[in-house]
Image (cartoon, rainbow, N blue to C red; front, side, top):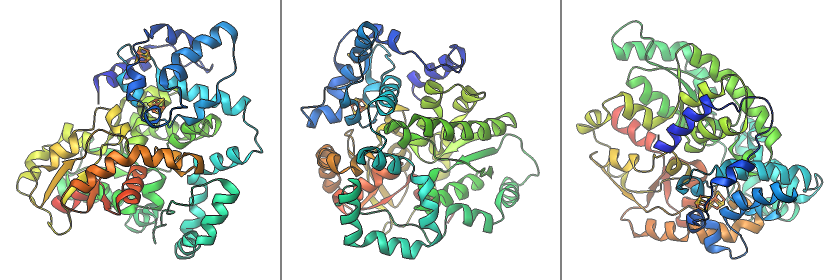
Length: 442
Ligand code: SF4
Ligand code: SF4
């Protein structure tokens, strides 16, 4: 966790923001001294001359609102919510909180609820509500979504970029696999066996898997479970909703609020019992740690934020991962040279260096960091017809660096960055947990 994020966690516990009232971010704009560091870091501003940048979206807009209570400018919908501006501000201006709040206000007050843009954004933001339908009949859904006529229909009708390949639904969801395997009770037994002891209150984690690992890439979630059990952790998988990241990014703050309330109630109860919360997606850990405390005021919000970790981060803090990997290896034919991209949300949490640092010593793989550029997809952003070209322009630097690596496999922690990496290069993309699983368990 970055120092800034640790400060924010502390602030979330101390600040009196849990009043149930919407946050007034206008005073935060006074901390901005117009250095423009945020503007130089913004990947959208770099390729889109019409986008006024984070300084305008954040402090300047809120200053104007204070003076004249102006409407939110529609350019807020061109911010991809990558949050890169947030992590570079030397004055700790709460840029992402300002952007999320401005987007919510814009959608609520300025956007027609019958417009194609609103309907499309609502569908994209609520993927987790629609995915169970596709997951019930995965072969049929994959066939239909792959047809060019389907792509034409969703491009013309909804404004979803026809160039994108719809992610395939897995034959079996992670949660079905989990239940078939014996659920929480079976995990407890496996963990105990691996620990060689009966009870341990310290080694219990609650897994926040998110929608994508459940419906599309259950192999990532399975790896998480196997790796944690190998280290003697009992894993529980409670019922959960989407973390809310795509909802924040689309200004659907009421949808996000409902999801956040459910997740906070569920995970706060487990934290009370001594569980730590583990996420395999860096945007999910970002939401639980930073966006929830910035936007919502439910009981347990700060507690969940203070006890949430990204999967590798938690193991690095609590276990001798380097030691475990020292004598391990993975098949070079499967992993080999791994072009690693650090998601922007991992960067924001100070986690961008850990995967390469950790896996460099492992036999059978040679992870290469492809640089600090943004992948460009930013969740649902690159799925929008009118944002597709911008998204691909932003991704160009990453694609080039990936293609400079020896192999044809990439690695990242974010499922939508993985989509963009595959879309831009054709590489197969893996999650670091899959590499750990192959090295230490499977
Ligand atoms: S980086 Fe911070 S202080 Fe500098 S212009 Fe942006 S918001 Fe203002
Ligand atoms: S969140 Fe990303 S896209 Fe939005 S203003 Fe900040 S740097 Fe630019």
